[in-house]
Image (cartoon, rainbow, N blue to C red; front, side, top):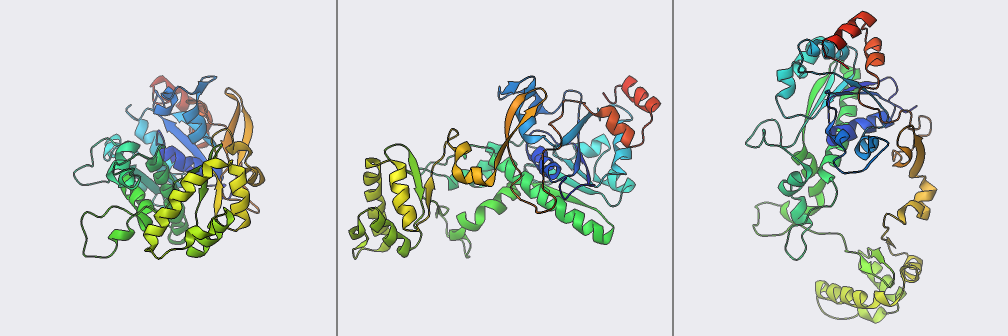
Length: 386
C-alpha cells in the first residue's frame, strides 16, 4: 500500500484535470471515492471511440485505484448525504464551474462547517473571478490563452501541443497542493480551500524558460517567447534528438560525426550554429539512427532516439525502469498502464483497485460512512443514490 494509506478523498470531478489528480492520490494509497451523477463522468461516454468490454479508455487511464458511487446532487436531500460523508473525509476535489457546488449545497463553506479540517480543492479553467470566470474551458483553449501555442510556433504560426497538457499539468498541481495542505492541516488542525485555475497552473509550468526574454522589466514588445529545445533530426530510418548545449558539446559532437572542421570560423556564434545545424540536417539521412547514436553517445554528448508508440514499450531504459506494466481488467481484458513515477523504498505505490464501473460501490461506501441498510434503501427509492 502507498504512503497515503488512511487518507480519504471525495472526488466530485470529471473528465481529466480532477480525475488525474485523484488517480495520483489513489496510486499513492489514498482511498478515493469517485462520486458521479446518474449519467456518469463524461469520460464514460467513450467519445474517443476507445472502448472495450464496455470500459472506455478514459476511465481506465484516469480513474484506477478508486471506488465509485452515484449521488444525484440535484435531488433534495443529496447534499446532506455528501456532507455526512465529508465529516469523515480528509479532502474534496471538484472541477465544475465556479459557483455550482455552492448552489448544490456542497461548496467549501458548507463542508468546512461540518469538518473544519477538510482540504477542499476547487479547479476552474480561468479562475474564480474576472471576465472569463463563467466561460467553458477545455485544454486547447487554455493552451492558447496561457501562451503554450505561441511557444510551439513553427514558421511564425502558433501550434498546439498534441495532447491535453493543460489538464494534466493542472491535475499534478492540484495533487501537490492537496498534499501540502494536508501536511499543514496535521500541524494546525485546520483545513483550507485551495483554488486552482488551469491558466495559472500552465503559466507556472511554462514560463520559467519560455518567458526568459520577458523577465526583466520594462517590457519590450514584439519579442517572441524563447525556444530552448532542438527539433529532432531525421536519419536514414527514423529520427534522433541531440542536445549539444555548450561549445564543448558541439566540438565533441562534430568530431564524433566526422566533421570537426565545421566548428571553425570567425562568424558570430548564432551564424555558426545555423551552419552546424544545416550540415547535420544534410548529413544524418546518410546513416541509420543506431549508427549516429553510437558515435554521439561515445562522445558523451546528450542524445537519444525518438521513440514512437511501437518502440517505446521495449526501449531498454524504460524496461530497466519498469515504467510500463500490464494487468488483467475484469471487463476490458489485458491492458497496459504507466506506473506512478516515484519509487518508494517502503511504501511502493501499486494497482490496488481497478477503475470502477458507474456506481459499483455505492452501498459499500454508504455503509462505511454510517448509513444503515434502511437508509440506503430509502435513498435509492428517492433516486438520491444508485
